[in-house]
Length: 159
DNA sequence: GCCAACGTTGGC
DNA sequence: GCCAACGTTGGC
Image 1: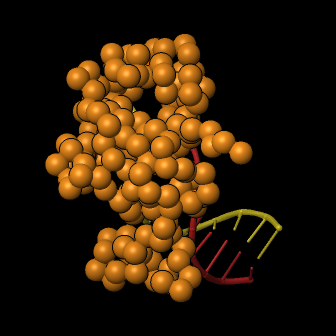
Image 2 (image 1 turned 135 degrees about the vertical axis):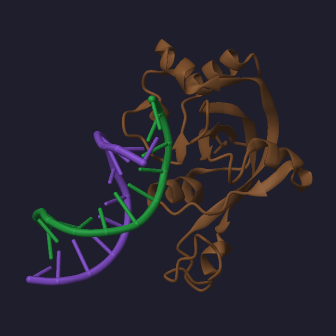
């Protein structure tokens, strides 16, 4: 069966890791570590495939916005930062023998010349159902519909 | 299994 | 910094 490409949105606080950080990373690639939410983990562990496209969103900044796109380049594997006592996201319940948390690798595709702000997204009728715009939405790894992904690209003047 | 208390996220 | 909306924890 042919793989169907999926679309995602990943949130990050630019103070801790920004799309500019991704741009200057080796091979413009990074592991998406530190996710400690089961629903988000399940998306990464069970549903993300190499080749899927990702919107990168900067939260807790001004303005909050989708700032670019990336691609999944490695499917899920254990998040070893959960085993590191010194790591901020350390979780003693996760072990190498029985890992609880997973991550994927992503590679930068593009930084939007024109970031698409949350305010802009809220004004677009085609995005009314987008998870990001749901009241109280906190999920840091969200599925995005293809039509939504395309609409955001269009708003950014990107492909 | 219920649910109160607690911790976190994230827009404003 | 505030606080609404969550998710998790743990006593019972």
